[in-house]
Length: 158
Image 1 (cartoon, rainbow, N blue to C red):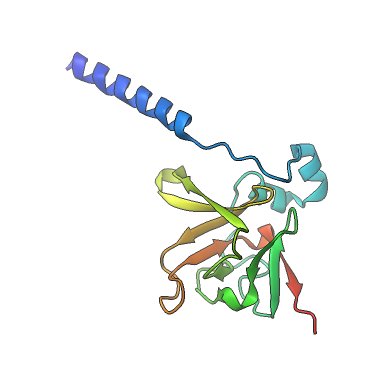
Image 2: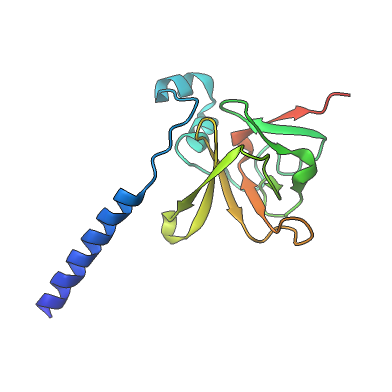
C-alpha cells in the first residue's frame, strides 16, 4: 500500500511539472504593470481583465444591449466583436457567436474544477470571458460569454 501511495505521489508531481513546462508563454503588444493598469481601469475592470474575475450575471452594462456598433477591449481598445454577432443567450452576460478575426486568443482554463476555454484579448492579454459550444447552431455554434466590464461599446457612425 505504501509503495502504491509513493508511486501515486510521484506520478502526480511529475504530471504537475509537465503541465508547467508545456504552458505557453504569450507576449502581448500592450504590456503594463499592475500599477499602470490600476490607474487606467476601474476596480471592477482591473479585477476582471487582469485577475480573471467574473461579474455577476445580469449585472453588466451590455448583457441586454443590442445597438449597432463594435465592442472593444476596455483595456487597450482593440475591436473584439461586431454587434451583428451578438445574440440573446439568456445567460446574463453579453454573448457573441464569433470574434473579429485575430482579435482574441484562447487558453485552456482548468480553474474551479472545470475544463473551459478562456478568451483573452490578443493585444493586451485581458481576460474577456469563456467560449462554449452551445451557441446558435444556424451560425457558428459558439457562445463567447463575455464580461461587460471587459468591453466598451462604440456605436456605429451614421
